[in-house]
Length: 349
Image (cartoon, rainbow, N blue to C red; front, side, top):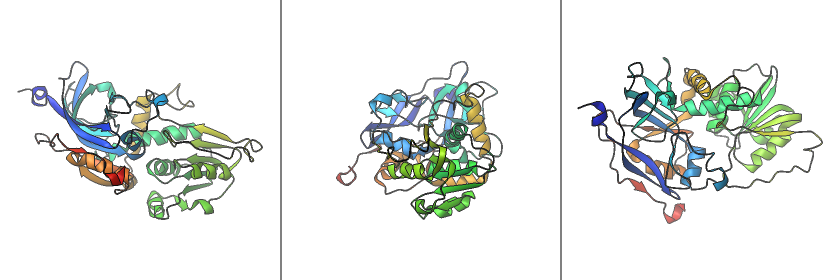
């Protein structure tokens, strides 16, 4: 029996309604020329975006732009969505077989993709940590957008997964100062693990050259306007989905000539777009993960069979996480019962 015949089916996580997810079985094609069959080792839940999908809150006007590279189905649902997956190539071109790879692929135990979709995990980067590749890529793109310079004063608002990642990368820059800002005092220990100064928004220092906003809150963005110096830049990395945000742009916003600029990972930042490809950006991102400090972002793990319940617990707040890791069964092991489904209770609607 060939390996493609042995793994002719796969199991994937689908969002099937508002706060409803389930594991579904599907046929798996044999890899064609230039394609690889990948067995998943780990996937990561990118909580901010994936919970927007889980709650069926993707605005219709950006549904096409928000589609993940290997997504199936359309927003709001049913849709197979996700993009932090690490696995091992079981079949494909000889020079790919056996390699551990990262792929922007939804939560699924096996999948077939063109090898151009894969990023090889370099030596020194554990497979579990490598699920963060897509988040590091987001942070790299934000810093290319921001363009910090020697001696800059920089603030990062929001000590979540993306904000923490941005602050960690900025810690390697020759800045005059860097503050990671959050309303939750418990985030201080996380910031200390990253080697970054932490403070509450009320204690943050003003006159920043750059403020990078990652809290996805109106209050956080308002504070960014107060902390940035005259003619300074605010890089908005939060995504509010279908929520409205009101800002005090009638105070000194115009007089101080402030700028708010969006950063989104779908395209390489304009400052590097003509000289870097998406593949270049991913290769850079995964190479940075040799630093074991990134393990601080991995805050829990669950088996693949538990994924529908894990997503719902993240959504209703009973499970807290930065990046929650999903672990997949070893080769030859039945992954899960396909009937696994979670629907919201009245308490979590």
